[in-house]
Image (cartoon, rainbow, N blue to C red; front, side):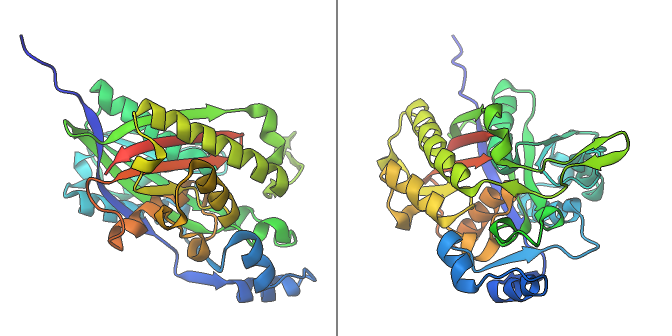
Length: 332
């Protein structure tokens, strides 16, 4: 009797990209002062842990950022672009206002992929990468796809209200990419996704088109206190869920890689899980909140810095508008 081999989705390579325009707290404070909005480096850093963020150039689209991160991930995986048979791109800031063609399809063309692989976008805001990782895992385990390019890419600077210091100082632009492939070695051990639309008002872009005119605001709006309270709660819950599914405990985790939203949320989550802060990958100080790009950006940064090594257990989790949240446990 032939014994079937367990099929896993394993991370083969990672990549990331940040726009050249790095904006420090001092620079954004100066910009806001011109509109009569008072803030300071100390005010921003003490509330968020952010010192700087990157903004895309006027001629850079989300797909351009995704392209640079993807090329690095494909190179790190040791494959060619035409080896990819599925592209999943997580973003809340697509190239096109109506959302189509998908930014994933634009990325496919920019990568020069000619094999007509499937490509689609995922919209789960800051949970987008974690959602995409779970989707890719299911596709690979089913045998439907062999090599999947997952990208989180955002140009959030385009939807910020620079008269609202509670939001505009927090977000940045960037992209992170991961190639996952079918393997008989353990890779993604467990993943989970959740949403609760009853909380949609606390983090959203409320504008909509009615009869050809914009109704409401085209800028991001957030109830910071409500988001903080809910985020810490659901991040602990989904972390415990995937750890149980993977038959692991927090003590087995070498690195927690949370969505880089706010240092206080990350510290609160780590404390609830009993994971020491020196086992948490933190890049929010340099990147700001890059939404769907934040987890793969942090992952790639830590891998290239030599922090994360093969064989280690990683816990990745995100939470975002919707309200959405998701997590995955990975053996890297």
